[in-house]
Image 1: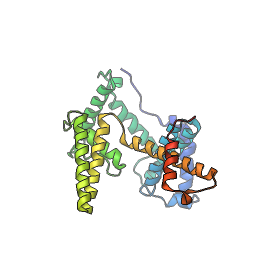
Image 2: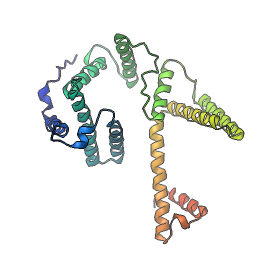
Image 3: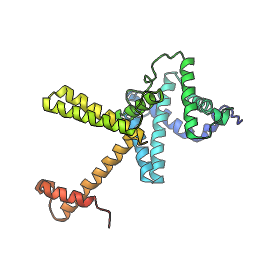
Image 4: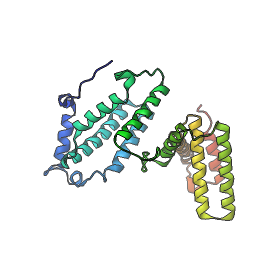
Length: 270
């Protein structure tokens, strides 16, 4: 069994310049903008930086990834500094807590449990999380701990996975596809009736059904949609580029010409 000592503060010497920088920015002679922030006001920046890290990973650029990880780390230090000012916790407490939690949730590495596959690891993880909730006297339903402010597709994916693990699921992908088709038909019916409220509801049902279909084929719907958006942008830029080469622009172009260029953009690069 591997034994790990509690994280000593001296191991954080590499973070010291960043911690001191943040203290200065929040200090009496620091930056007015940084001093005015609260934990709630920097939430959008945390989300933005996390997505930029993901984008850097997909760009396969080590330099970009290093920079974006630094930006995300800065936001973490920012949060810790504000919490420290309110005498709640500091960066050292955050790291100690993370080490303790990860050791506890990896008993197959730091304890006497056995897990030879990723699936077994996930089962242990879920069981341990449930035990942690009971220890804290948390009595909410199994879907209650999915954050409400997660991106909707990610949240739907996580909720459907949790429901599936509890045994509430379809037998196979064909049943999910039938559900998708059923929801599309209900959406069409709502359109025919021009029922605005029902149109929104049925559209949401279609999206949730598609999320379940993605789960069955092990596709992350948020990632899939993000990549499709990137593909759309690249093809649209192709249209703009080709029109510019001809001395034209979108406002002077017919939809037929744009569609022709769109189909051209889909062809493999020569």
